[in-house]
Length: 348
Image (cartoon, rainbow, N blue to C red; front, side, top):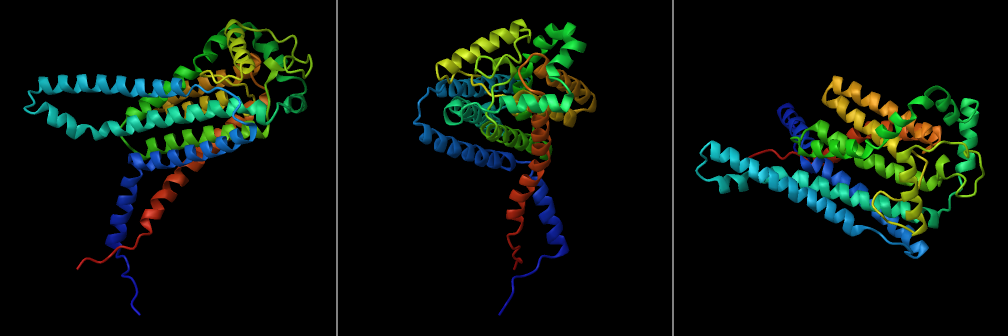
């Protein structure tokens, strides 16, 4: 009975090099991301079936947005590349452009995957109050009080209330900063670092949506509107907060689906996303990372000061972001390890 040929040290070295290369490919992050999103859709379908699909969803908005971004970046890239070819007097610009097209596939795949996940996140948030009516707010408020000795928003207002307009303005930078970071990340060449940050992103927001169902809650801003009491009746509303709050509540009354709609407090979507963004910036450059973490601290404090979240929402968001960042390399290595376990055949 013969055994499979064993790998030589040289073969092992080559295998390790291949593994490193595999972590710097589109497949290294796109396949795990697609699997994560598939699980989210299966869960959303199960929840939707249980509640009877009684809501509207902005599928067109997310798909059109994703395709528009892909088409716009593709058009700009083609024009720039053709300009470079003309400057360099390229003899066959069209053929070279086609040859270099695969570099764009990763960007297109990433934007579409981000759009698909954004759609399922909105879908899940729309179904949340139908499938799991809001219940956790009194518990979260009491936990906040137990941890800090009084409601954290009161502490924040005592020391930083004078800066509330500043926090209000910075808070709305969350979406442009996060999505801008994603666009830049998707444009960059493939690398292990890029694979890690993208897998961490998709994993983080999957964690968040499951957390939202575990502790269905609305947050201090909506505490009275959902009949939990007047505990936060004296919470002042800044202009951007008031506008966003009205938008979210009207979306809720319509059984929504509007882009960016859906009410949920625990865990903090914004705090988790801000920390992920800061971690990405820090992985690019330490000085940029210092700015990113300072911005994250502003978002963290603002989430409580402005009334969007309980402090424990932010703590949960931080733990999830750190966990996703730590787990992402293991997912990448596990995927590569499956390929690495394929026996190396001796050449004849």
